[in-house]
Image 1 (tube, rainbow, N blue to C red):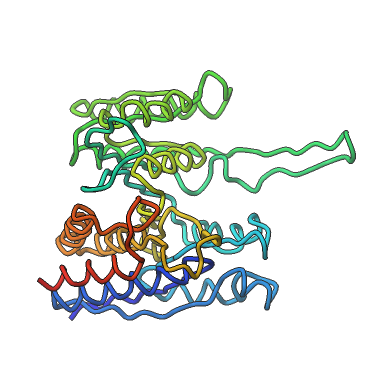
Image 2: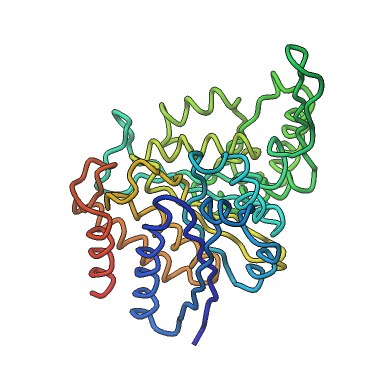
Length: 351
């Protein structure tokens, strides 16, 4: 019997509602397939925790999380309680950086039965590979002077090692898919970092002659996600560009509520973290209409990374069968409650 130890962090808002739904599905998956068991432990790290303790997690929080195979996160942030930069840096980014989760993977795929926001979306299936540890999301910089003379300086950090790592993963993924890698750049406006990025992309591209490669400026590429998403395959971007593009990808999927993501540690020293793309959505808390698919699809990615690819693919097929038959929450134009969608997924897993 294989046991996966999972640290679950429901977090804030709808994260507390969708996490139990995803865990119900995961336990059903384990029951149906056999040979697999989940050992969940829940951690209360959240904005409510911050209000009580003055921190998003205790001093030994990272040590405790490091004992698990994976971290399963719901949603973080509630600006009405804690400023977003505090909740983000105190929990989500803290885990990403201290656990060396240097790669973020975000699929953007049109699930069967879901109406895209696009007039003619065709069938698109994109994976965004985002460098997750440096780039624009650096804490290097500061603020000086006061009043109208105040200046904020933000330094971007791009290392060759981390940039090459993201690009190598993108090309590896493309070799198993349609065979195209698109690089998100802005070398016509960002003077140092983006020409550096482009040079490394050209270097990696030359090592993969059987895979097509192209570079597009971030503004044009964002528009391309809207006008020609079916022509894209694997997109690789910096921390900021990857973040933006993956949210655009989530939007064209019909709702950000269905989009999953994975923050991967590749050296085996620390656990990886899996989280849906959506936020805590405090405006719909308690209404029972939060979309559980983002969290459940994220569970599929957790299974896949932990060596259970066949089980993961079965789960995704069941999710698609459910959406194809119209079991959708209001954000997708449907009439079903969160628990009803989950119940139908569980029901079909058992067949």
